[in-house]
View (cartoon, helix red, strand yellow):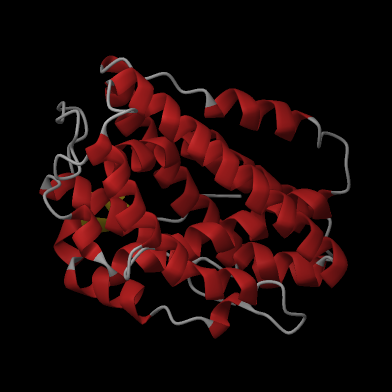
Length: 275
């Protein structure tokens, strides 16, 4: 099992930030704003999923997972709190979070279901966030021009997503989850995650008055399909999840560990939270 620590980020999100905070780029700002809008409810779903999953394990297995799950819960709870503060600034700028309602409707449909389903969904989404995290860490130029506190927020979150990328996956395996359902949920999560992110990004751009500007979409094409673009760099690690022998730890997390070591003054370590 992996040792996960909880970090308190030393940044101030109570102060307003610029509307196009990501280097003045409307598209990159709108996309990351959209992702942030999904995090508070999404992170709570992950917390609830792993808590429910570990409780149905045999006692010996519960003990084996206890420390890692505590660290996972603490990290995700911290992400939820930080992005709630960030999202409050977005709301004050006039943006509307449409994604949360879709998350709430879908998660409500899982009430009373086998807890392995929620854990499989969590593992699938964690893979999505982990490969996006590695993308940001490997290509920090996509955050160039952002205020230092916001760069820190996104790269800290990215590093911790990479760090705890295997917790839900290992829990799913311990619960007896099979490959067929793991892949089935991953395909469904992929569809909904991409379409929801696109819908919220478009809504953000519409409210921003930048949806139909040429500059917006040239930036989008570069970010998504350029030489160092998101699709090009994440397609292969996305496909890796479909392999029967896949495990999240097969993917390199050195950039995450390096960022955490080099930015140790940006956070403090806190005690683990109880499950």
